[in-house]
Image 1 (tube, rainbow, N blue to C red):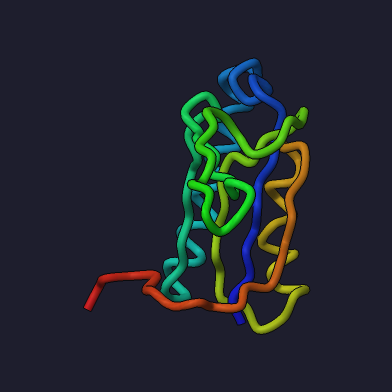
Image 2: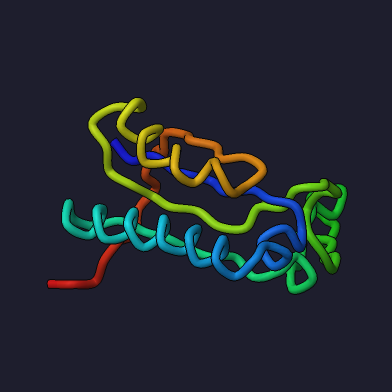
Length: 124
């Protein structure tokens, strides 16, 4: 089963950390990515700042055009900064992958993924 590991943190937290701490967090990410790559396909994405986001909302009815708004979908202290999609046998296995990330971020959400199609890799 695939699991998403969603990463949330407040704006500016990572950037305000001493360089050694930033490097340590990035090493955690490299370790997760190397481990997942050795197991097979996986996905990871780092989202750009919310200042680059656009939200598309329902226009209020079937005859109304969608409303396009600059910015994120919700006002929160923490923002969604990135995610992994990993293939694990159990939820507990996915939680173990996520645990090292929890030390440096506001929240890590682990959620089963119902695959909707597409590919995780284009490697032959």
